Length: 343
Length: 186
Image (tube, rainbow over all chains, first blue to last red; front, side, top):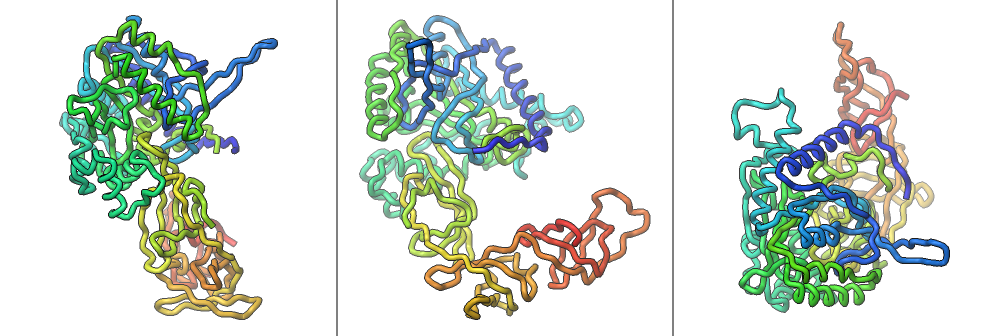
């Protein structure tokens, strides 16, 4: 890898700073407390699909493993349980195994915020208001026109997207509409893999989750956020939600993601507050990590302790700040916003 | 040679659904809901058509062993380009539909690399830059001194490119054949 300085990106970078400033302005004025957090932790939440960076703290003859946090969730949930109230983190997160790509980097800036007393759709309302606020803040006074609905539009890669409302679609509806996969096939692993095989995907040696993810990316994502509005796609199969509350149907969980012009920007769920269920899922995720040969790390039992202490209903969302910056600066790749990249 | 799709790189040749394709773009993508993926744009080397395919990053992909051989460009007709391996004097043809617009910038005698798989040509790697003479150009309009202003000119191969207005007919310029952009005077 090499260090690359790209001074040509200064205009985009300044635009990104404006977006980040609008985000903090919006959340501060809406009563969220900004929380600064460590990026190194001695224990983590086990998540089967995330690989982590491991390092070592040394003092005289004492050594201890530390890990770069892939998300601030473990810290924020503790604080929520102990009464911090609505809060957010805007800072670095780390995902090993994510090479630099159009929409990825192993080191990135994450916005994560939590609101008490609402479910995931309550967060959806908040996100929409935040997008409108950002758009208004970053638009130059000159470019504003009298029409309110025109001012709610953002131009991204030759597409005008109105931030007036969400286009909402459930996972079940989306698979039916875009991939012709029925509800029955979607939730039955065996039927799903059979259907995928018929469609020409390789299934031998791959899990339901792997193939599901491939079909989602190939056949669903290209349609998301491309119909004139940002798309909110919700209610994922329970296999994809380690920390979210299940719906009454027992098959799906309260999770949504949102997209603008095919770019996934955020991932939200109604938080699972049942510590027994959470402990069970931690064990399952930990096992999956071991099977897939991921770095072993100490499991954050303090997280379970915090849930035991008691966490009222709350929901949270993680948003990729660089991706959000891309939308409002009309750039194609996260590296377009950076003055320094490691490639 | 089998490799994980996660290792695919632009320019490589793969067997996909029983046909030969060249990777135009390979971009890591992790939807966070299952295995990571490698989003590839593949160009079919028979039809010239492009498709997007998202491989699971640990899916085995058959990458073709290819040889790149320096050849001399001879000429083209309506459908094909003709090249010659200067060592063996063997001639090869490649469909224009596969090579694409870059061939508008080739002139007899240009050297370039051709990719061969089991002695059959797949496609070519265009040179980074070609030198071509301008055969038609308008004179810059008087008073048109805006910096960065450009005008179209016709090159000896018939291709059109935009050049700064001070460049004149009869001059030789260098062009990047892949982008069709003027890169300087020679």
